[in-house]
Image (cartoon, rainbow, N blue to C red; front, top):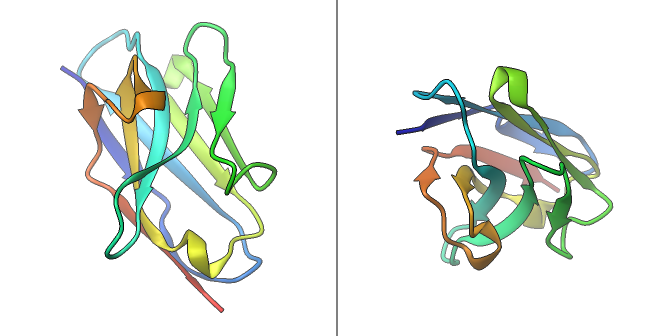
Length: 120
């Protein structure tokens, strides 16, 4: 069992930056790939970014490519999402996820979510 706890959300203005963190606990070894998803009001949850545990390779949604950076610290069991040049359309609840099929939107574990609001 893996518990995921996100932090770092908040209210910012367009063009600002935020860094989200996701701490994994419950296992001494987290074997999963890690990722971030988001869900805006009235919309379905969508993939944002993913990082491989083994290779560190990353994948991003086109909408955030060049602005967001995902990273992980395996020793701390923590994954980060650095969000720069934020836009109002980035407003959503951001969810941390752990699993093997994140690119298909399937996760073994989900966090509770953290709200990011970007004002224009």
